[in-house]
Image 1 (cartoon, rainbow, N blue to C red):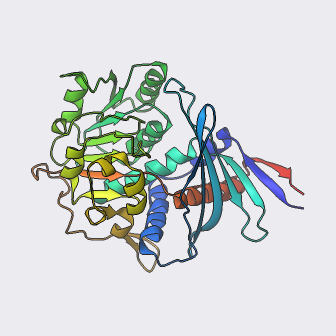
Image 2 (tube, helix red, strand yellow):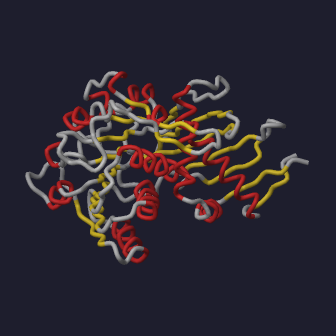
Image 3 (cartoon, rainbow, N blue to C red):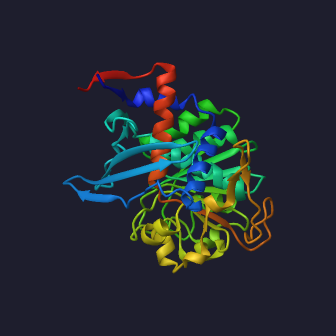
Length: 356
């Protein structure tokens, strides 16, 4: 008799808390390496299917990964609210298949799982090309993506002494996020600001201009800040946009990043990332993050030398910035969901349902 493992949101959080940030980073490194190396013809990432419903855009994302150390097949379903006032988050579920029987072996609440795998990929980008000397971190947004990024980065990156959360308004969610991180990281100064991109000057400008690391995870259709606010040598992580109409930064900032413009997938970003499309970036001007990693004979992660990248770590006088733009790829979902299922089984977490 087959049994279906069901992992609730709290189950997934419990399991995810058991993962080391660097282990998560290395998991995403394997995913990106597989995507960029094209050595494994059995890994598939069909383009996402988007189906409109009255209140949401339903995204269906099937994928399969098959390498000596990673294998699995899954389908993730995410519903993106159409209303900007809907602050309930993005409902998400992932089905994981049994590789032997072909039946579904697990269903996971993936509401926070997507944010976790994105944050792990972002951490990888930072450790490849970001400056060593980060004291000021600025984030735009206050949703699950930003919370996952703050959690991972504040645990993995030493030296951060100030975090500024910039949101469209200082609503209850933004206040709760700020209060939560103040409590968890008392040595770090955490402030919350409202941002009006059309205002001539703002408190956000002062924060952005002093930041060495900026993380954006919003659905904005206009740039959140102008390129002129950003100091040379800053590393910017862009997670929010996934359609041609979405723009978290302007074209000038994108151009400043070339040739230090890292992406998860050239094809996906060329088709979906509004900032990349608007800046008329060619495929050759993007560097896939999977091209910058490899693994030694012991399976340990190796950062490849990348002389074409203009921003040197720890310098701020190059006239350029570095950017990691991610629209998300299905292989990430397979890897993180399979890892959570495996860990949940080891921990004895979750509930089983007879499926026959």
